[in-house]
Amino acid sequence: RPERKSTYEVAQIGGDGIGPEVINAGVQAIHAVAKKIGTFTVNFMELDWSSDRYKRSGKYVPEDYIEILHRYDAILFGAVGAPDVPDHVSLWGLRLAICQPHMYANVRRTKVLPGISSPLKGLSPGDLDWCIIRENSEGEYAGHGGRSHRGLEHEIGTEVTIFTRTAIRRIARYAFQVARSRPRKLLTYVTKSNAMRNGMVLWDEVIKEVAKEFPDVTMDHMLVDAMTVRMTLQPKSLDTILATNLHADILSDLAAALAGSIGIAPTANIDPSRTMPSMFEPIHGSAFDITGMGVANPVGTFWSACEMLDWLGESEASQLLMEAIEKTCADGIKTRDLGGNANTQEVTNAVIERIEAL
Ligand code: ATP
Ligand code: MG
Image (tube, rainbow, N blue to C red; front, top):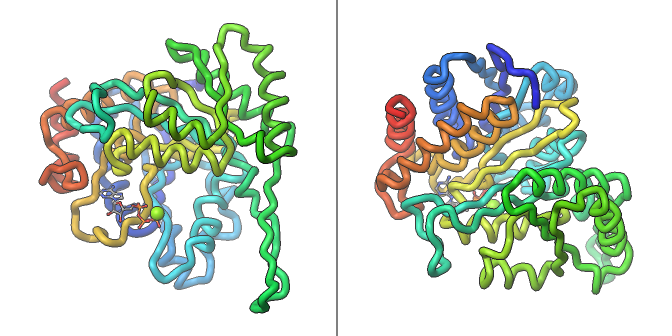
């Protein structure tokens, strides 16, 4: 647990598309919850790191961006991606530039919220209570590889997946710790070690070694293809889930869809060593189709703000905000992606009212 402070400094990076809209909503909710608790305040510093900045200056982030980020206790991040910048340029320019060096654990919680219907039949609020841990520093997104014979019929592109014992061991330990902290103490780890016989087999071996340190956690193993079936047909059989960068990326989108909408799901990019501030962001992207219309669902950002407050040690504030989100959803105050007709600010106001009333 970190030492609690009276003032937290948070870097606010709205980014692109609906990112600044949902982050603006998140900042309002955090101020409201801090005021209600009364023991701390949060100072936000807005950083204009975005595709607009890239188009103006050729860079998403300043040269000394790592030193800049060191000044903050946490980062609240919106989204990155613009219609006129290739996705691999924007993603590597901003999100991965910030996360890959230190934030090796990507944590995605999923739960069916009250008032939100899952496409799966027979699930009640609170069901599908999963915590997906994604290896966030290497693997399939290591960025290694190359292209040769460009433009020719025999052109080759390689994408080299890199798995290291060190990175597997540290993410496995983190996942076991998360599993241990949850009531069911159940960890399912996912690989594809039947078809991929090198790095994936290394995952299996290292995880089995780490499991010996956590005899109180029940562990099972799934191949990623079978895992999609189990998530859909036996969702209540799962709790904490550990997978590689690519596998967990895909499984967590499935998880968000099964919980009702990608507009509500949160992400935490954690540096467990606390050397760097950790980064909290909604799972969704920049969604240019609804940008500027004021209808973006802010719930994914609110939930990410809960994760941020919890990571900072403000668990009471985190729980209060989560309760206010759940009450707002239960009362049917929802954006149109959830079948409602409230806009972003109306949902934000409703959450703030409930924070004040709790
Ligand atoms: P990116 O390229 O950054 O991933 P995207 O345009 O692909 O962004 P996503 O965020 O992945 O958009 O979402 C896909 C679609 O889901 C969007 O086009 C949008 O209609 C809808 N959507 C996403 N997030 C939200 C949200 N917060 N509120 C309402 N609708 C959303
Ligand atoms: Mg997308």
